[in-house]
Amino acid sequence: MAKRQQFQQSIDERRRRTFSEEFKRKKVREIEQKVTTIAQVCREYEVRAVSVGKWLTKFSTNRMKSVRTIVESDSDTRKILDQGQKIAELERIIGQKQLLIDFQAKMMELTEQEYGIDIKKKFEKKPLSGTGSIGNDSVVA
Image 1 (cartoon, rainbow, N blue to C red):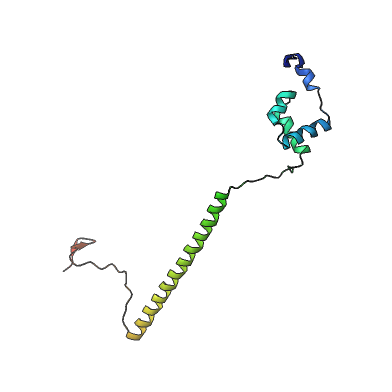
Image 2: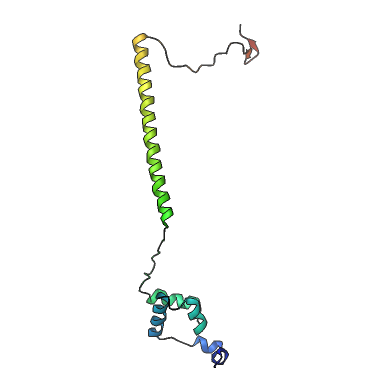
């Protein structure tokens, strides 16, 4: 049986070596049909993976140049849909709460007008009873 070492070529011989277009197309078809792998072609014919990659780019029927295929698993798609539904639900709840706040503000405004009383809290700096001192140690009685 012949050994691989008997067929090895020198570096200069390999550099000058060219493969026919038909050979390249055949190997690309084999790789696409999962008959062989890129690594196997590289080992068998002592070709760099970069070269086989170029063959694939040039002769492949499945791969388009400059186009990336993104594979998204079902779980990712499901997560995105679930998150979209959750966002929609939260936006609906926020809308309801805003309507309630607007309604309460309008009712307080109408009540203030009707009865002439100030219902809304005013945020003034008044000392609380029993706090002792404010600012420059003055005592509130």
